[in-house]
Length: 410
Image 1 (cartoon, rainbow, N blue to C red):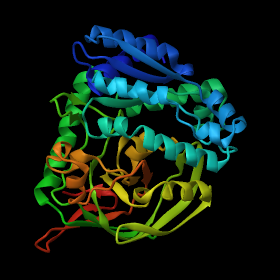
Image 2 (spheres, rainbow, N blue to C red):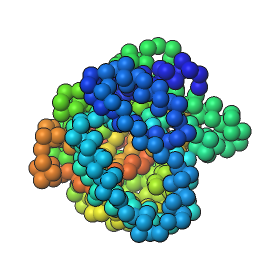
Image 3 (cartoon, rainbow, N blue to C red):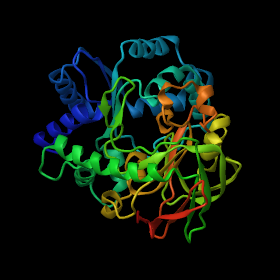
């Protein structure tokens, strides 16, 4: 990617993604492979008025080395200084920019028990920071850049150089940076389109959604009481508009924790904790997964479902046209940020409080009365298909076809 494209991407991440406010500190998390782009984002953040930029560097190869060689007890330990650092960030009311580019399946050889225990402990220790972000108390966003390992996974028949270029171009397409226009204006228009769809769905106030396709999905998802559809830009409790994910094509809401029943078949692989889970599906009863299968990395999926009580319930249901830019690219990214925006998806685990009317001002106990699911996890998996049909049912018993052959008709 050339300098002009990267500058536009940094501007998009800072001005639209986290929408840095004057005097606000910024936390940037980034792999060492993408240090150059992180520096561009830091400079852009200061131009937007940031008070300070904190850098959190990571290196996936060192992470893998540690996981392979350190003991289970050492890997699972979350030092107090790390928790204190994130508490400090919350107190400073930071906005958070996460730059990703991990290699799918990199941790295939790592003991699943190490990953499970690390996830359990991290979920407990960093709950306050998770609530800060998922409750929209501060702006946050995720953007991506290609890495050689990721690129070769997506384009295995290409040389490393060509694969990285192809993946970079695909990422820019998904982020709408290939259109030759001001990215800020492009995303303002895109957010307006998604907001109109949110408004349409909110007017119906559906009681439940019924999903069916020929792959075997036959699932009824009851929606949380006083649920709210969202997608595109969001607003913090302090009134700052931001875009949590770049790219995004979804409109999503909160399922009721105990009102999901039937079967769902995944249509894309899931990269969870560095392990690729393929050909999997779930059976739900009264909101909980009671049966599941996976042809590859069954144990990783089992670990996710056993992380805590909430990880076997749903926290999100998201609708996306099958006829969408990422789906039409024909590229399987092996990365949830992109693949979830090519397909209708569900998320196991924690729900977003803002998907209930007035939810960000409610306590967990109050949210749970609406059907809110609480968990250390929030993991999206894709189940959309070209023949997916969605029928919404209102509280008056009216049935409304929302999607036919994978696309919105309302």
